[in-house]
Amino acid sequence: MINVRVPATSANLGPGFDALGLALNLYNSFTFEEIPEGLEIVGCGHRYKNEDNLIYSSMLKTFKEIGYQAKGIRITVDTHIPVSRGLGSSAACILGGVMGANGLAGSPLSKEQILNIATEMEGHPDNVAPALYGGMVVSIMEEGRVYFNKINVAKGIKFVALIPDFTISTKVARSVLPTSISYEDGVYNVGRVSLLISAFASGRFDLLEHAVKDKLHQPYRGKLIPYFNEIINASRRLGAYGVYLSGAGPTLIGIVDNDNSKYTMEIKDYLQSLGLGWEVKELQLDLTGATIEWTSVS
Ligand code: HSE
Image 1 (cartoon, rainbow, N blue to C red):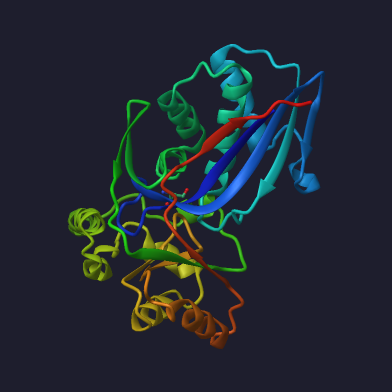
Image 2 (cartoon, rainbow, N blue to C red):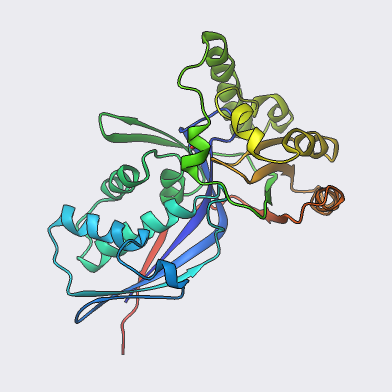
C-alpha cells in the first residue's frame, strides 16, 4: 500500500502570475493499492467515484508514460484542501495520482519527470512545483519542460487564508482575463515580482505592501469577489504586510507577522461585519513538499 501526502499551495502571490507559488501546511492524503480488478474510490462524494476522477486520470496518464499495466486500483482519499478556492486542490489530486501510479509501478520516474507529467495535466507549474518540492518556488515552462528554483523564505511570517464560502473554477477565473495587456502593465508587474522575491528572501516584509500588487489578473478577478478591495484595505489596517488573491481565487491570503496574534480574530470579525461567513485559517509554509510512504498490507 502506498500513502501519498500533498500540501495545499498558493500560486501567483500577486504579481507572479503562472510563475510563483508556495506550499502550505494543509494536506490531502491518498492511499493507493493495486487490487485484482476494477476501480474503487473510497472517502469522497459519489460524484467523484468514477473514471473521470482527477486522481485516477492522473494515474492512467502516468501508467501510460511508464508503460505499466495495473490490474485494478483502489484509491482512498482524506482531503482537507478546499475545492475550487485557489488553494491548489486540483494540483494536489494530480500530483497524488502521478506519485501513486509511479509508486505502484516500482518508481521508475525521477522527481523532475513527475513534475513534468503533473504540469502537463495542470497546464501551468505554479501550484504543482511547490506542492512537490515544498517552500516557495518559481517555475516556468519552456518547450514542454518545467524549469524551476526554490526561494529561501526568511522566517517570521504566517499566511492567513480568508476562504470564501463559494467556489470559482480556474476556467472561469481565466476566462475573465484580457487577451493582451499594455507595455506599462507588463513593466509594473516585472518590478513588483522582482521586489517580492527579494523581500521574501531577505525578510524585508515591510516591502510586501507594494510588492504584492498586480495588474495582470487581480484587477479582473477581484470583480468576482464581493468586497475585494475593502477586505484588502481592512487587512492592511489590521496589520497584514501584504494581501493577495491566492491562485485563481476566490481565497485571499494575508501575509502576517508570526508575532501578530490579533490579525486573525480581527479580520474574522471584519468579515462577519460584512455578513460574510468565510473561513479564516492560519497557515505556515510547508518546507517538505509531497511525501510518499510504503506500508505493507498484512
Ligand atoms: N496561475 C494560475 C492562475 C493558478 O492564476 O490561473 C490557478 O490554477
